[in-house]
Image 1 (cartoon, rainbow, N blue to C red):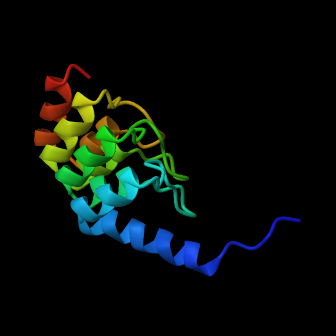
Image 2 (image 1 turned 90 degrees about the vertical axis):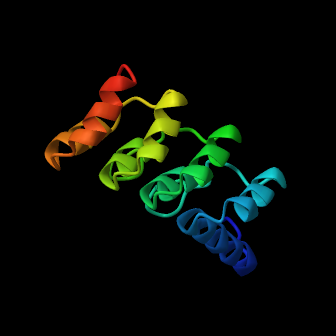
Length: 132
């Protein structure tokens, strides 16, 4: 049997996910630099990168990418950070992700499919301009 997770660790993880959601880039970067995994994932499969992208925090997205966050990881619904950024129409986050090599066609609900379904021509143009 595994030991229960320390409640303090759970509380810290919750704060770190909030930092990604809130775009508190400097605070989050300090934790990452201290050893928190850049690919930390919550119970829904959302990574810090997916949360930052969904909430339109391009600076946080860039900080996560520069610290090794995997742009290709999908959550439990098959959504990637790029699809989240496209859905929220965060052009700067989309640019950062495609510059890092994110695939517009990856995931069950890809960024390109999201842009097409929700009729987001500016996002389609960004994805096409990136060569994807």
